[in-house]
Amino acid sequence: MIKAVGLTKAFGQNVAVGGVGLQVAKGSIFGLVGPDGAGKTTLIRMICGLITPDQGEVSLMGHPAAEIEKARKSMGYMPQRFSLYGDLTVMENIIFFGSLYKLGRATINQRADEILAVTGLASFKKRFADNLSGGMKQKLALTCSLVARPGMLVLDEPTYGVDPESRKEFWKILYRLNKEGMTILVSTPYMDEAELCKQVAFIDKGKITAIGSPSSLKKDFGFKVFEVRAGTRDPEIFNGLQILQDMSFYGDKYHLVVNDPAAAVPAIGAWLADKNVEMMSCKEVAPSMEDVFVSLAEKEVL
Image: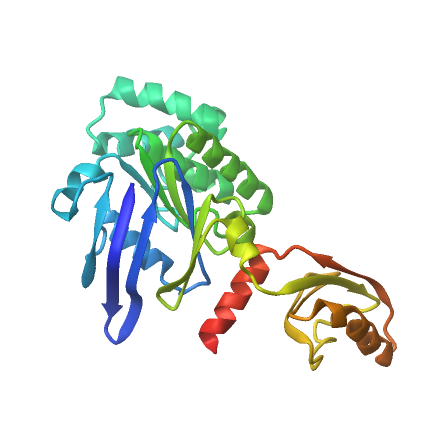
């Protein structure tokens, strides 16, 4: 559905995306994951044709670069920030957006009713967009991107800044659309959302450093992870422990990444005992996408 080859874009001396290639298969949920400033938005805008790459090319739905406008008529795009009209109602925004695709009023109304039922906005047709919550605004933006019934949907950080419950609801909608056959490319800074994708590409400093399914990326992680609960919430308690490759703190537990699991438990216990801190539990756990991508980001820094 999407094939990008050697995409490069620089703004002045800053290379936002450098020689990126990726393929999104039909029927996939493909996640583009990385920190702020990694190049996600620039890459997505090149794929959508909103900015022209300095080098490289994109083909969509089998259409080469020379015919790409034909494919874009079957693509829905949802930008990073809410970009609809706050002084229009939910329904007025949908009608305006549908008219851009030259859809008739009857067709727009029919499709709007179907999509609003899925997104849970059916009872808010007359509410002004400015009066919607953050999660509802994102659902409205999604509704508008779906009114043309695209075969492919591209979303740029659609849940950024949205509360966790609204994020879960939004992803339930994406899964439903995907189950109905829609191909989805979505960028996100959230690792829990990366877990929900069928394929994931990690982008950092304008380059893709890893690509694969969440399960394969975790399988290839190369280290062991121990989850530790201790009688402290000091995020720096393990600073200086030599066996650690990396460490993350999650409020009441620590994720300690090691390459020698046999030595890990006694070394961790001795370290805490030396600091008069009780070790409440220490067990090996499967690596999370957070563990994987923190490791990949640190490799880039090194």
